[in-house]
Image (tube, rainbow, N blue to C red; front, top):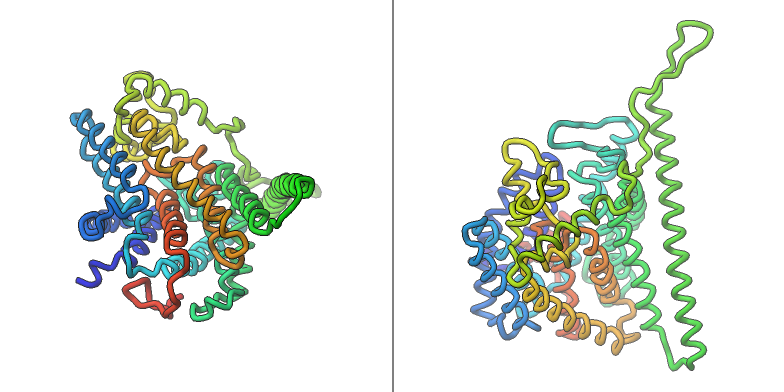
Length: 484
């Protein structure tokens, strides 16, 4: 019973399970395990609502409850259309709200150890996966069938992930977590938590930045650059003193200039990496046939450049957003629910939602119903929950943003050498990332759950004002320390 009631163990298991749904050959068993974890999550969610009175103790919980109520009403209005699927999405959102964001209402949970546990696990697992993927790439080893394209997908590196964008997001998460582990490594107050090898940290940073560049995911690059730039800005806020107006303006413009330089350098290095690795692979994919005095060079495969095959910078997103607003115009108040995006799109567009025809196979219809998305978190909320749900969620988000930013500004230098600026920078960058990807809420994915996990960490840090005392990990809280 103690294991079942251990919400820390659930959160780590749930995040890891969602991560494995992104990996080829593990996707189906991971979804099977996720169904079991969903039952566990439902029990813990109900427990948090009833036992800990989340509806009134959770910060801004009234707006969360109102938002969920609007979504339930929308599902009931469209009860004849994918009602159970819509309720499944509502269950997932409830877990995000009450188990991840609402972790601060659990009095005995040591959230810091959850974070450090996941940091080390993802550093090891994702880095090893990317190393194996790079080795296959250089050795011209790949696998393709109707469902899966491993190592290279549409001229972009994907490794063992099912999509280049997922590979890119995983790499950014590792870089973010390496930053957290580095801050911990040089912080004397965290000495009781095992340090991570510098070799692992350096290798993880190099490999994951390289794979981020090779997967050519513009959205993931936005997240990566956003994280760096926001962190630089937070350092500017934390280090500011009693400047006069002139010095403040100069410091502001120097920060803007630093951001521009970071962006320019990142794109330059990305191009260099793509060209260099493409040249290396090209040299390995050629054979020289010599039947005469004039040897002939033959290309074994098409040239790989690691650039999008789709030359449109939006990659079809503008079409998706236009279609979404058309659907919204017909259901502006109550929305349609996430499960109905694909079905309702056929009411207004002959070929349905853009890219919906990518899914094929025996389970294509069900799979497409779950995965068809607008690739913009905010428009997705608007279409799925209507203007009423959108306003409720934005009030919740705005009030959270004000309190978190206020805490950052007031704390100033007291947050030096803590992980709070890292957490803050990731969440802010993710909000920009959500403009281009299916993120924040209406997607049962690793990306979404990571956002709510980090937001929960921030809220705990802010509300409790100081981190919990250090102690060794127990098996029920995470996993055996020997595995880390």
